[in-house]
Image 1: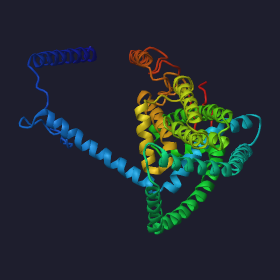
Image 2: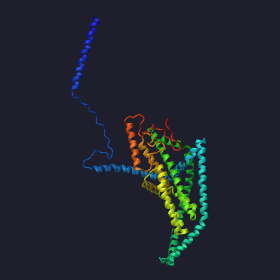
Image 3: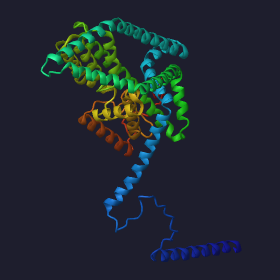
Image 4: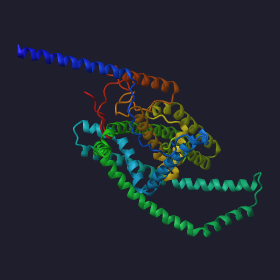
Length: 463
């Protein structure tokens, strides 16, 4: 009994203590609680984000915030262009090698799929490409040499006819005035002989840079064809680990855009050269093959290249065969340009890259200002690649596939506001579904991200 009584008394005591604690807790909960005051964190004030000052208008504050940011962006861009201009002997050949690698990569990939080693495939395609280029160049030079004598005679005859027209035409220019202008031209040549000599020395220096650039392009193209994907993976390993998937996938889409652009440009240039070349051949204009080759090369500068080279063909036709032939060649050039602008560009180039014409003109102008003719050649593909990479990183910062899939990089659809609105609405709907927790939905409304591939390597598909 003693032990049982002790247990009962202990249980009663514990129950009484529990009741007291419960009553105390109820009284405490009825009193409004005061949250503990945490120490005020230090506030870091960023220039342009200072607390609002009522004495400064809102528009001025916003303008100042934008101004210092734009100044920083301008300084960075200036430094970038300065470095490119300083290293142009290296940068320009590397860019040209990338364009050539994008053009030759499908053929090298075809050989690799049939069991050829990567080095052998790259070397074979590069050698065949060099043979094709130098063979075509030899034909063009030979045709130019063969037609130069006739062209010189026809130009001399045209100049004599022009002098006779000035003497007997409605302008009534005298022989003394013509001789005076000729003497002025000879005097100018003698006075500027030193400038012309320095220009020749500068040309010799430029020739040395061209030879150096040629070999740099040659070796860079070979290694881009052979080890393009490994080079891209190595470069992305320099970035922080969370940023690697998105940057690698952005590089894959940018490479897809570059290869599509180069192949489309080559096809459009070939059509321009063939169309204008047929017109020159039918009228038997001298230097038909060199002029067609000039049109082909000029077409690599969008919008203005083919027009300028066509103008040269019109000028040759005017000097050698008169105004009737020149007008016919001009009509042929306009017809080819209309075919390119309304058929080839929308159907072929529009699928490779969609850029506003104003952005193309500005890019060409900046490229020519920074790096001359070569800058004009590479400005548009660089803009296209940058456009694709930036749009992809904005749409998919997580590194997943773009809304159009692996074969439709962002920014490569034709410039159509309705299609852009549909694509944007689809992306917004997929993003909303992902945020709502719908299984299997991501920002693109597509399956899980695929492994990113580098330049020169086909994209890896998700299992």
